[in-house]
Length: 547
Image 1 (cartoon, rainbow, N blue to C red):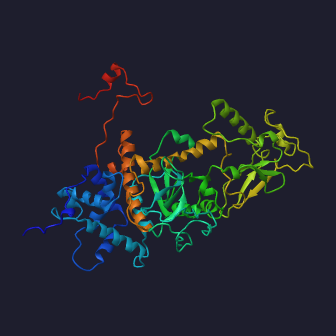
Image 2 (cartoon, rainbow, N blue to C red):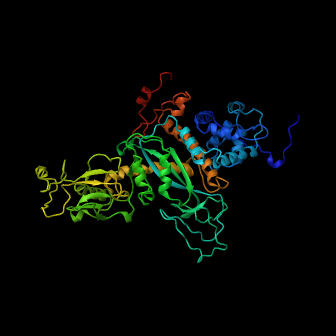
Image 3 (cartoon, rainbow, N blue to C red):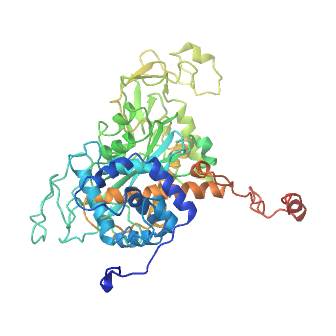
């Protein structure tokens, strides 16, 4: 029996070959993915002939594709990936060695999965949970550090903007209501279910802001990908780097509330060990406290931010004799010369940094310090700088006057409203967007906050180093489609990051240990500290015994 003829445009010889280490990891992730049974139920719930593209083949195809093709998630390329599988690889995912997989089969599988995620037939599953199950499966055996960084990046829609001068109708807390009557919109852009304007054929894409790179504009139309990654557990352990992988993903239309999306990403995290620190971009703490900071505290996180210039400065304290300065509570007997201090920045000279840090340390002696941990109801006590273990000497605390004379001495009388010898109870509503476990602008804060470079590294991998998800990399419309495909891409990127990070250190990644792969050989041709080649005598003594 001869094979049916195909039109010339449907015949292609393009294939994408999958390496063995990639294939074994993909199969392991598919078997560990909790969404595997859900996808199987979606594919089996149909009428007609038996589906040729099996559940495992569908999941494996989309996962292996990002290993092989960097700049797109097109269905034609995913079909070429399946064509490049060997007979043994096809059998491993339930395909016949001679099965013909067409473009229509691949696109129909993704469309059917998207409809299932949006339907009420499967109330326990949606696109966000499916993507999160892929991320969780890709990180099996890789324990979190206890500290995470949160930020968002832009994912442009494939649709073209069809209206002139579009407005970015996004606001952190109150949805903006732009007036298009004075702008040349012909015709006027329609509004979606959320009251925001739709400028493309994509019904879910919205206008938003971004930090533009070379060749980009500050505004775009599409989605915001809110991602959480691991960072070192403490600044002291920052010299021991960790792989920056995508722990959670929350994809939302661009311009949607940062705080709400950030909390959604936090809720998808697995239980974290101490210290449970969250380092977030200032866009998250610049919203109302009830939408992000307080919910993050209620979930057990300690938040670390960079303050916006509008958030810095002096404010009245909760009780008489206290004052807020850059998010830290101080006594009012703080010298005026230590009130307005610039934070440390990386463009300062060494001498400038040393002088600024010296002034911050002098000001830190007048700060209130935590007295115990935060209570479940949100209360936390802070003791004044002249109370137990005083950092200054004050007549209002006679015991502090017996401290070393080199400590700062204040001369507060009984009639002076001074908080250096009192204990204050703070609540979650007391400057939540500004409070941090350290003083803003100090070296301690800088070392802790800039651990967030890990999330920038992850976005660099997503936008150019490993993948290149520019506009047009994902074709199609709708939040569900973009969430599904981005979940596949991030899960594959997690596997590649873990393998490369451990291989660089001559170690097996977690999946390599599970699969029983041999340990990578240790190369000694470079000194681990200086990077120089060792001497000839050293190379002779460090050669392998079998040489």
